[in-house]
Amino acid sequence: MERAKRKLEHIEYALATGQSRLHGFDDIVFVHNSLPDVSTTQINLATQIGELSLSSPIFINAMTGGGGEATLKINEQLAYVAKQCGLAMAVGSQMAALNDERERASFAVIRQVNRDGIIFANLGSEATVEQAKRAIDMIEANALQIHLNVVQELVMPEGDRDFSKALRRIEQIVRGVEVPVIVKEVGFGMSKETAAKLANVGVIAVDVGGFGGTNFARIENERRARRLAYFERWGMSTTVSIAEIAQTVPNVSIIGSGGIQNALDVAKAIALGASAVGMAGYVLRLLVEEGIEKLMEEITLLHEDLTLIMTALGAKTIAKLQRVPLVIRGETHHWLHERGIDTTRYSRR
Image (cartoon, rainbow, N blue to C red; front, side):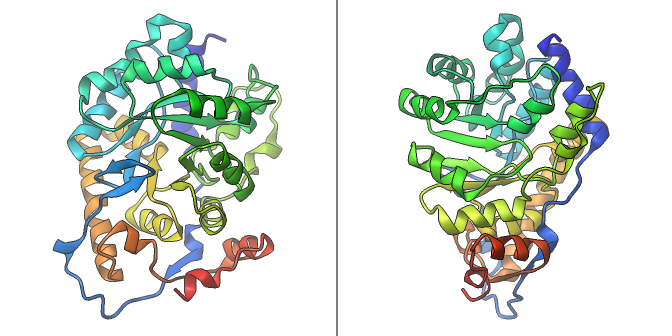
């Protein structure tokens, strides 16, 4: 199938299937602070992803591009929102534009609209160093996301079947490009073992892309004659992915993503160990169904609500929010216990 048509189908099915919200955040409870000793005016939302400085911990995560005029318009609007709201933004996979010059405009428009913003380029783990450099140059990217989507590819009728030497290619890209490299999952979560391997080859941050958000196995099953239903519940939740990595791989920044839709989700992801959070499916739905003004209004409210939550917890900064006490219960606690993670590190700090 033509790649552009597939990209449009992904948007259609993402909106149709929605998000499961099985991300695990209901298992996370903050320890209430009756004496926070802080004012809302003292809250600072700035954060760091490796060496990258962001004015907000919330960013627009990779979604689309390479689908002709329709995706060009979406990316143009998202870039405008990112500029107006002070958010970083990641593009969807740029392989379409590397293979077809006509698709370049659907990505280049982001930098045209948002000249001074933080923008992440995006390619799959099959990419070469040369392709990575071209993708970065295409949008004058501040960082490169490399996405891992093995299960999606396996369910995709025309998807890849060979994933050998992916880590070696990622290492070569890290060494060969001049911007930081972030590795991202696409909805199936990331284990501590995977994060450790990536950190060891120089990756500065991992985006856990946990189970509970947009389900690409389900999306690709909609395009199949025979469903591979067993992959629709495959993966690790957002909460267990963040906690596993935060407690065992200290030399990598963590981006929480996977079903995050409100400021409480954002705060919990950061308190578990994330430095920033990516929002994609929720943002796309608001943009397509309610328009650009509504999306910007919701982002403003997200920042306001996060400020209130941090005030209640007595956390003036994102770094301090990462150290507030919380209790982990339910399936998240069970998973972490079985994986050898001491959850009292969170409750007794």
